[in-house]
Length: 311
Image (cartoon, rainbow, N blue to C red; front, side):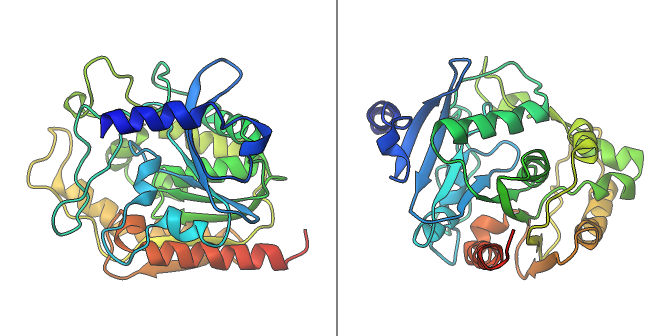
């Protein structure tokens, strides 16, 4: 598998930034202005282009996994429009499922396919990097942004930073800015600074790390969200609370987050005219792998609204 992956990146990466590559299926490395390589995968044809932003710690491949209700989100959307996903530097690949279809956590020897950068990172730089990546690859838009978990506020910041590019937004059980004010400081501390446990990634690997406080502050300071259709997807079941918890985490604090989570989604949607909240029964946090059909349907509904409304 490793040999095949290396071959695919070598053979496809050189073609990604050529004029002929735009509009064709691509999977490989794109060199941005500072010389770093970022892994980008795009499939399908049509407009607008859907850009899939993974959650914290996940690479692009998460959008090609389906625990049930296939096809997975990326190939499912590619049958009707252009769709792209990329590896944020410092994420981890999640390429396997177990016998009953449940996602298996990434082994520690599976870093993602983008060049490393020092961590922690400024989240505004992450958004600017994605904009540059899409531009160089000829995937400028218009865009419908779909973000899971941390990818939700990153997609929101993208839409507010580049409003002329954004034609729609879907957040998939995302961490919404409203969550910060709804939790006690000790509960919010679970989210404020994201760091992977050292035993979850290879030694020497620059695993992604961010300040969510910084991200939410940047969203608040950014220009307003453009007048675009928005769907807010919410898990239907609380996240299971593990038996073994880190010393600074209690079951009570996690239960409080579970209780507040749907309220934060509703509060976020209430601040956006016309935003729709979609609760997906039977799902926990990874809605896009547990019910990829629901994410595909929500994205298609946003595309339909976006393409029928004058801008």
